[in-house]
Amino acid sequence: MAEHPDLRVRVGPLNLKNPVLTASGTFGYGREFSSLMDLNRLGGIVVKGVSLNPREGNPPPRIVETPCGMLNAIGLANIGLEAFLKEKLPWLRKLDTAVIVNIYGHSVEEYGAVAAGLRGAEGISALEVNISCPNVTEGGMGFGTDPDMSARVTARVVKEAGRPVIVKLSPNVTDIRRIAAAVEDAGADALTLINTLTGMTIDIERRVPIPAHGFGGLSGPAIRPVAVYMVRQVVKTVHIPVIGVGGIMTHRDALEFLIAGARAIQVGTANFVDPRTAPHIIEGLRGFCRDHDLSSIEEIIGALKEG
Image 1 (cartoon, rainbow, N blue to C red):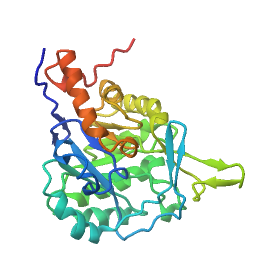
Image 2: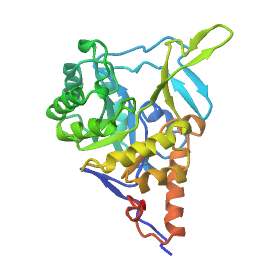
Image 3: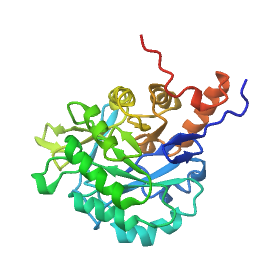
Image 4: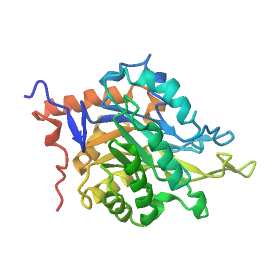
């Protein structure tokens, strides 16, 4: 039996102490969870999305529980680039784990400006680019729904970033493989998938949508089978590494993504259910390796047996 299995993984240029990261928008800027766990145990932290200027987000209510998940319409509320650099990053850079900054914009130029503003800042391991945002110069169409627009954003961020670039893909497309291939060709170092699925719920007494925004992003266990499927399809399509996310609550959920070929995973909605989910998953993966006499987590990555 392997008493001390090696959980280290490599995701493109990134070396992670284990494959468990926390997903953007579900873990704040990391410090909010520091009293609940040793953050240095994590493979990495993906901070909530940072935009060029501060955003208040959508009016409440903007989160609603659904069967096996939740809908959120936060509206990408954040403190903006300048405040992030001054108020959040100095604390984050003290951590002994990968810090990945999720960024977004509403034009190609805005994405580039955020990436350029973070260039040279110490303590950032990589950028994760949220391409699910509406393109205000193209009538509000989401960047991530069109291969050409996805590639344009990726190329601009790669040009400005000066560090590894991970692109987070939207599942709200006909064929996610086309987007993945376009982003790879544009220079991305890795991919994260999937972002939330668009959905809505209705208050039948008041006959109004919940959240108040009218629709939101569905996350949680309800979307996990979709996420696992899309991860597998993309892994077979591209040559860059994939990070899987979508409804991961336990180490067994995480293993589905790893076996499908993801080199790391992100824990999202589960952080709201049990803030200590990520370290529990790390221990679960270690125990699984011991029980199956695996000396390294690498032995299970991409081990899916297809007929």
